[in-house]
Length: 316
Image 1: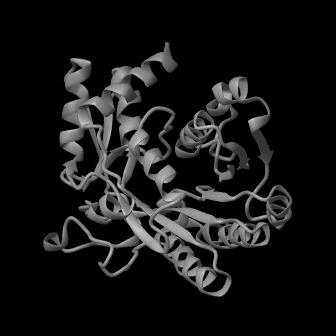
Image 2: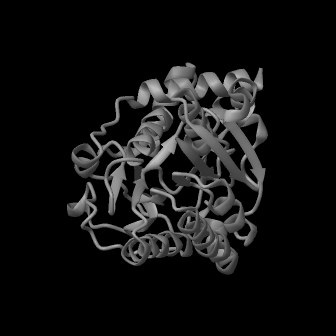
Image 3: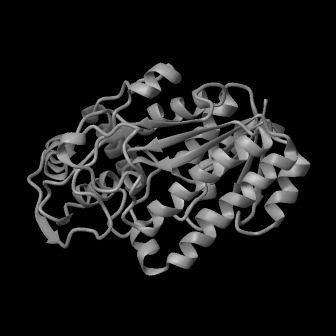
């Protein structure tokens, strides 16, 4: 099958590319390398041969439409984005240019290419806003009330997906992702907390905790997430499906788990809570279980061990 992955050199995208190539698909990667890295695709480039083609291109440029119309992918995985909530607060127009205009370009490219399915990486953390405690874990039926421009941009793309499905019969699946973590993730400005904790712990440096550390996240491992993307290529049509674990973990619990695996007592540095992010977040995943036949299988202890091993090898 001919596939195209935007953001294919990024953390999630490159892991997805590896899986698609192993399963025998042809893969076009589109990435502007602003956050992705060619090194993430090193193994794929070595082994894939002509099955992998990499295009250095910004999705906010109209050229992406022409490229997709020419390459004619059957399935489009759209992961390219401006991913940082804090950047969206400081530069909302830039956020919208990448996440809304860029996504529209990719949608137009998929339409002109006659694609069979459009799989979109939405944000389960930002899409639903600040849920009441009694609403956790959050179901897809929960009101979408984002509290940041980033969340608004993701919601807008889901709305566009519905319209393109009705107007042009372009089928879609939207995956509302919890806090994805795993090897290849790079911490940036306080985001990607598992990767950030790993780097600081292995360097035996103080670990910055934003807020009081009691805020919760639903941490889901990269391999499990990639499996959901692959399943969404043929299932879950016309739906938003939450992809998480259904379990809350505080940042304090995460740090304790990771420090225990490192065998050290961490030094903590407190920082203000990050604006625009929920205090508690946890996703109900029953729709994904029913519609995609998907459930996560990696527990947090095993997942963070893999991250620590990856970070250690990178530092070594």
